[in-house]
Length: 380
Image 1 (cartoon, rainbow, N blue to C red):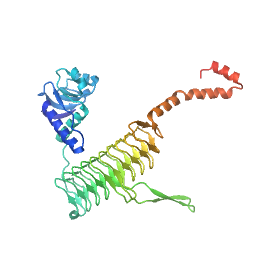
Image 2: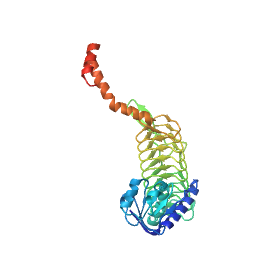
Image 3: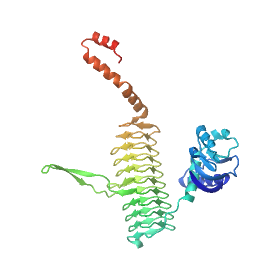
Image 4: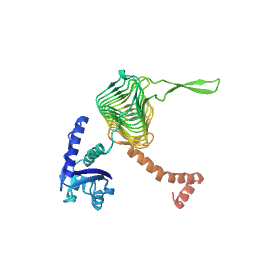
């Protein structure tokens, strides 16, 4: 439950529509679908809540009759719903749109602006202030470190304790959350968010092995990584994630890609546009990920793996080679089309025990006739 200052349903619809229109225009999207007010638009909204936590005064997001029933049971003031539920609503106040999730996301954004306090300005430490270019309306949080020749675009926010090493470039309207670390030469585009504790531009994990017969050791000789990390516009990187710099060429994350918490992107990886990377995904060095790919939780890409555009790699799967382009799910290790993986799993669970019992009987049968007799008496 998120409490709000009182606002009418009609005003909220107008504000959400205007926000969506502005946001999608910046992102290069199509104009948003219309948000229609059904019922009494003067209904006052005092809170946002899930259907399960519905209470008088709350606006709930519903997408099915089951959630609608929960919101009604809680006597919510209004709902955000798809047209398929419009008839079921009767006179109940509602915001009806073909993209209810999108509308509710805009409303949550409006609430966030009102509720989340801005990062405070403070006393940053500049290594060499005259060499830096700080745009207008930039907020530098307390105890942030600003290296030499750092560039920060207009309206960006550098949270408390953020570390920006030499030659870092930050675009406009970008937010760096507390204690994010950007190592030397990292470049970040406009309207990005890098969440707390993320580390961008640390050395890649690469060593040259040198045997030492005298000592019996295998010496791991470090490969210094001198490439950069280049992050496009509208990218979000989750808390405690890591993106390693390239060996010589750059590690690149293109526009619109979103990363969850605790993800690892290795050296010289290239993630295309609008990729989704869910928590605990690991991409080994030189992995290539096409546009609009989904990498779901805990999946992994081995060194040099290639995932074609639009593919979906399901949770805990392992990509060891190349996945072709196309919007279909891939699963297992190594990945195969999910339908094949599910058939294999079903066979292992259902048929393998039967085959094991069959071979046990087969080995103990001296003749074919004895085998037939045993099988007719035994459930296999």
